[in-house]
Structures are given as structure tokens and as C-alpha cells.
Image 1 (spheres, rainbow, N blue to C red):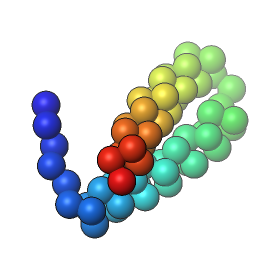
Image 2 (image 1 turned 90 degrees about the vertical axis):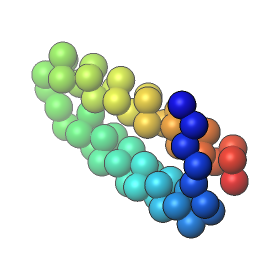
Image 3 (image 1 turned 180 degrees about the vertical axis):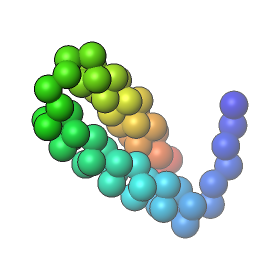
Image 4 (image 1 turned 135 degrees about the horizontal axis):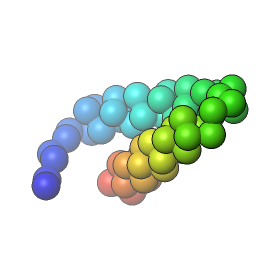
Length: 58
């Protein structure tokens, strides 16, 4: 799949991803349920990968 973004769209998407990553870090820390914590970590890993790809494009 290919997604075309202009510089403004890429920057905004990256900003949103980074905000979500910050929220996930807090949720992971604050969660006691092991299964839910694992799901949040998986989500964080996927979002980090996407953010790194966007940074490499800039």
C-alpha cells in the first residue's frame, strides 16, 4: 500500500502519533492487567514503527 502525504500532512500525522505514544506510555505504566498491558505494548510498537518511517521521509 502506498500513501501520499504532503509535508504538512506528514508533520501533522507524526505529531498525532507522538502524542498517542506519550499517552500509551502512561497507560502501560498505569495498567495492572498483564494481558491489556501486552496489547498496549504491541500497539505502541506499531505506532513507533510508523513514526520512524515518517521521520525518515522528512
